[in-house]
Image (cartoon, rainbow, N blue to C red; front, side, top):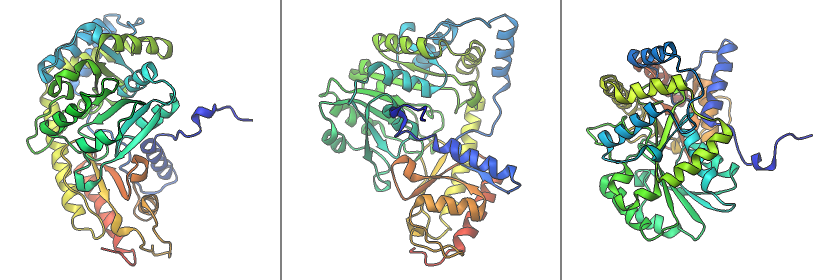
Length: 404
């Protein structure tokens, strides 16, 4: 007897969550494992944000919140977009949800007809594809190789748009690659989309504050104002403010799209936690010093990992422009043999070997539709990262028949 519907057949559990769970289970068995699978800052939520939640609870803000978000939180989002992104939105053009992932789910459920295509820039966050599949859409991966900086090109975009194309999903800085588009590159993509009125743009900007090498973030809708009404800008407080467990994401777009998304949310979860919304509003409205401090730490960790990977035969990593991941090329390990005589045939084999031989949990690139790579989170401390890279280096040195 099966309890699951057929629509779930092609859907896989979150790869990063699965890897993290496998690491936890290994630790429970007494194994020494470093978990670099889950993208979660190791910093604590800033105190003024926690205090805002405390005060909201004391004020009795514990009743059902509005489905689309509290007035205070939506106003904080409106003010944030105007202040940081030069984007003007009205209150009815904003929705607050249980994390950025729910914003995506709401948007696709509200807009996709069976067979509608969603363009995904591979490598991409794996849940993009699964959400589309659950909702009857057709994910269309567009390979954006390392040689192209993991970036989509205008010619590539022009060549894949069909009458069934409904969304282009852009994520920058990118999970998993850390890729960042220049203003000119975004504008060029916008020029292609201008001629395709049916195509909507979902711009996932949740890593906007984690940028390196002096880069300045510019929102897609700000760079392509003619497409603003066709763009849903998605963000959240999880990454920049170390608030993963608070589960607050938000989106801004045309009021008719937001109204449809609110209808969806009303039937799934209703409004997001009122106390968490109070905390998120304080994060957006309050001092940003700790956000900048977090970013400096993430950049130093990026530099550490890039330098360490460069000294390991068979592995490659160009410096990511943002986010807190390293998408490490492992083509040089494919075909090598482990000390037990097993051949590494793909990046899944590589990550399995690293977990077993090095005690380091990483995510294979195949789950992001681009191989052979593996992703590690660089949101851990420098001490942990150095330990992990020592272990990886030793495990690689034990392989036989490296190709590079």
